[in-house]
Length: 352
View: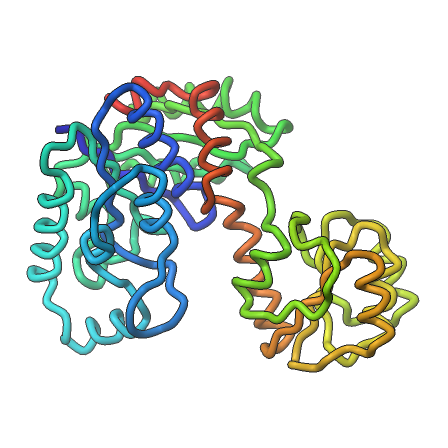
């Protein structure tokens, strides 16, 4: 059996999409594929059970008949980490839990795709980093990363060093047009010379950028106050409405595919945002309900209005995290990633 660990240098690299797309590509070749995510990190609360969408999506797309507690045996929540610090978790027992779940999931499989955490260090508190898991499960590992500037190569080398001989290569994802040639002609040969093969350079694809307004509302725990359309629109950036209405309008008109985050009591900023053609939705903070005039105008223009109870700073931080992560958790995204891997990566090297 072949085991492939898909890890990454940081959150938001497209690791989930790459993991599931590779599994689907292997299935198309007639390979019997299994999936596992040893550490659940996409949590909807600090305690209790995870509602991690990644294993659930894997179970659906790959046609797996497996229980969530096997697909994701360790729920790596803040409460779990705090308990580990206080000595309430037993690392050898956790490793055995992961190993037993893996053995059950991998029975009669030809390939196991194991999805790592957001970075290689997560899990260190209980000796379950991604390099630890690669050793535990006897897995080869590929590193999914982004490239925005030359200094990013340091992160790749650090990841390869941590994985040692188990590092099978690097996939650069969402590479911008401006830097694509640099990665292929300079970065890839440099890394190859350091015995870190580059097995894929995937171009940036707008179909994988941003999040839909509906997903944004869901992830922020917000209420959509309008009854019009617009919830399928993509949001790629956020603007903070903290200035006067007139200044805000000048600012808003210079952007596109944006969500404006402002206080629910700032009617002037809300009105200015609705006059800007590039604004896809309003996110109103503080639990305030906007005026009927604002809601009426938003409904007329099909610009959703989302009300959240959190403050503006907290909302901005959460929203930016979502957009950086991109649209990596639906079937359409996996289909797009399959095409990118087929066209721009050495799939044979990745799978074998």
